[in-house]
Image (cartoon, rainbow, N blue to C red; front, side, top):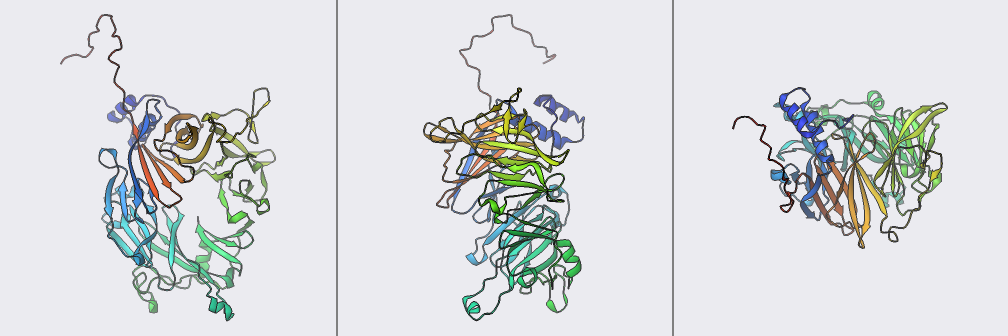
Length: 529
């Protein structure tokens, strides 16, 4: 995360200081220049490219992925337009790519011969292969066969750029087995890998005989095995402790593993290295609606919707250590809206919480008070004017200097042409900017806006109007990456459209009819020719 203490100095000053080499952190200086350009009032973002697809479109780390992740464009192409990087060979449905993650960091710039340290695309195929493709050329760097017994379909980060997890589908209990009274204790299988270079860590089964017959799902995140149960119960276990105490065999990729064979080769696959005979100690247990549990904050807190609530949109913030509710820890906008409120931890490692309602975004901070921890607002962004409120507030209410409450009437979007609603927020970590998406009504149509706010103060820096019409029946995702805005739309008919915007600093020409200065012409101060 990059923090900016101020906006002193212009772009020309920054460029000249960078040229003179006054400081070593030129990369940070370049990022600061881009931020200044993006926040200039004369700057805007212009749509320069769009593409439609019948398959899902994803964007990550400057890469646009089409055709079930087999076609890759870079957003940094010639003339600032996206350019085709590679297109993987066509394949049958039995070999298509099911899921991918982008594995890329600054290490890919090092002149290392070992291709394991280059940026790559990690993907799972329908034929149970874990593939590693070069992120710039599409060349296959590595292929690991997972298993002929389990079908793996999902891949996700356990800890970003450290390890990732592949998950199998849930084992189905056939009708014949159910009729015969034959139990099916196996729910699913999890396998963990490390990156830079690729290494196999462990694989274990989630068994109902071990974790309980009411277990429904499981995942590994930040070194914690999270297991979900019927009745909205979530239990957390230490995955590292499980591996240390229950590993039955040590297996390294491409090495011989006794009678099992070569690890990661076809048709051997990966062995079960961890076997549990009893449930490990529970670190943490909680009941939450739809198993939606989030952890974060400084110090550690967790964010849930209590199951007794019965509906989404109300959140509780509690201490992970004591379970005590934080003061002002009930998050509820108390507004009538079709879409429920959203709450989630900020991704900038500040420990703050986003609480977004139909027209208001609150950024809250956890602070130690006189009677425990409490939530206090950092700032509030109002969609009506995209302004920021830093004045005194209490439980979401805005107060005047005299202590009177400022009340605001929420009107229906179709009845009030000035109504503006929030749709989402994206954090640009390099620029330390929040890209807040809102929608307003104009001339019987909806118009989308992306407003850039300072991540530390919430101050409005710039406002971009989207050129394409906003369809409320579609799902919209907007991502900001330095000087690029990417808008991905999914229609109800499962058609996908991608729009790419680039920072535009075109300065208009001076009007020829503008009267010239009649004073005496000044001589140039430049010496020599």
